[in-house]
Image 1 (cartoon, each protein chain N blue to C red):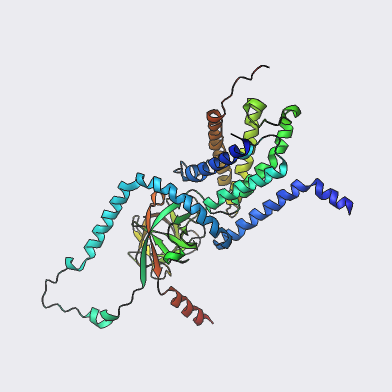
Image 2: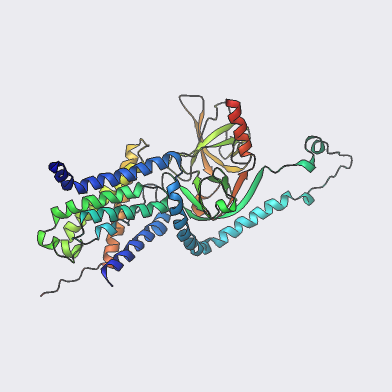
Length: 281
Length: 175
């Protein structure tokens, strides 16, 4: 017995090293498996405060850029206003609207919330963005995050006033997207190499692609509204084995200078998930 | 300034410089991410206990992990540095210097050549382990080597600059 104690005393430092090492690696493994960890919530709240102070300073440097984006977006929205449209042909009767949707019973499906980015990374394998909106402001995991230019990621962790967004630049990120011209859908991923290139798999070779084609979110995505800008095709080539193209996309959102984003809540998400669960049983 | 306060300030300074400045550097190249924070562990005094060193390393790493949202990644690498440091010191530093209560690793106490070797080895181990953990799921070996090599190079440059800025070598006073 005494010898065992002596042995433990002799290797105490080594044992402590191995113990702490095992603790950190198990944390790392469990975190990268689920992207969610209850024990990190408090820590995020604390580091979020510091990041907020810091970004209060740094955001002055990108005011000009943000103004440009806001003006652009206002232009786009103004163009959608009803008073911009007129009916030239007085005999024209708009049938479809009144037949298919009764405008009195239109239900909102997506709710947009603006939010500010307070921390962001692009040079890791798994990149996260911290956004200053949390549970108290109605943000929940699985909500979509978009910037004025294009989609950005999905909320994974939520604390009271902050949330953590899994950026598209994450090795576990996958989003259903479609090629705008043909409507063919594929899965958008990132291979972890270049933050300015994303990959799409699952687009069959029969599709007609051109460089510079627009890629948008598909109607199959649970989180994103249909038709949000994702990026443009940078290059594509036919995979030797298999039926699909290998497509690289230049993301429309600039991940290096994210400042303001929108968090989009799909109000039907729970209903759809429950229905699909029930159908599977 | 008394020692504990000095070390707490230094801890926070290294943490914030790493988390708020170096991690936000626009990437020069995808191979390069400079790391400086583990210099805190290297600069601890010679007479720090090994257990205390391990705990400090763990605390420093886990605090940085909170910022980078990778619980355990930097903690594990900083632990490795804290664990290997005493072995390298035993090999490289003469016993009478080691037992001085005030000294800490530096050009003055170790001599330029062996200090640079000491720093290089620890930086290399740190980056090797960090990138290994980060790329565990990834198969490309050339990529792994490239990232370790270039990140080590850039970090070493930064470390030497820090060294020259904050701990300039003074001529030893003759007693």
